[in-house]
Length: 432
Image (cartoon, rainbow, N blue to C red):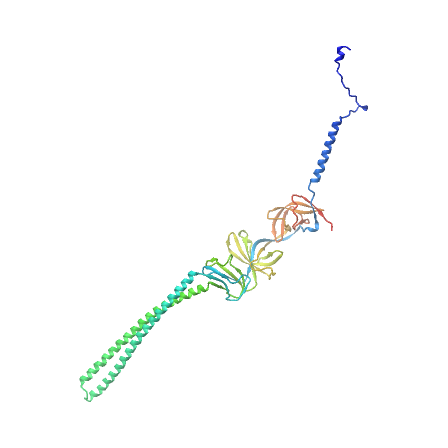
């Protein structure tokens, strides 16, 4: 074999199988099989982990049918019950609450003490006024004693002078008779006559002095009496104010409420509400309506007071003309006595009927609907529930107007239901 033959390269020739088809290498076949298996495994995992469609028992749902008809428009407002025939007791003087004698709910008699207050300054003023009154009374008594003594002394002197004058006058009359017969000298008669005249002048002066004394005494007594009366008036007023520190029931009834935050040791100012007494069991409601809707209110409008499941009929009896904090206060009179659960101080929701809407599409307001004009509701769709967006109109009582998204005859879930998250469809279990 020559050198060229020694450098000959060996080559492997692949012989195709019968039929002319080529076989893939074994390693490539295994790779494809692994990829196909992984794809199948991913698909199975996806369908296994995907959330299942929720299922709910149809009997557990509360549904309402969409209807077309008339709906009464309403407005709702927070309110509270109070006694219709009640006395509000306010503090006439400032002070500190020393004792709360009775608690709300207690039945009290007229004049019964409810609250005892302490006002040290007022009581000090009363003590000073009473001391000044005693001084004034003592002065008046002293003055009265002095003036009475002076008057009695002057009256006694005048009486003695008149007695002496009468005696001297009698003697003068006797001398007049004697002088006529010449038994007495004329000089003696003239002396007696002069003496009588002196007594008369003296009596006139003493009478004038007594009258002046009486006028002066009367004037002094009037002034002293007025000062005494003024002192007595001041003391009387202060005693009334001190007595008013004990708050008493103005009539027999039930103590329905105490002032907000009232407690022993609290300092109150004149005019602060202390308590409320009800003479009977009649109640009324006080509600606060937004001022923007006050124009819809009319006396006599029908209303309902809602406390849980109870709805008590009422009517608008008073509308406050003043606006406070962008709200108007409305009083609602109850049409009938409420159940035992209603009591003064209870918070309620007032629902006032305003005007009717004719021929509108409406349904009971779903529990899930808020104040937004657009909301999602669950609609019965064959054997399932479907989430649907609807546009809502005004509310009327427990119904709400449907502007779009629903048609008459459809049924909507209106009661509470589980939170189905982002689900769009709910499967119904209709087994009985």
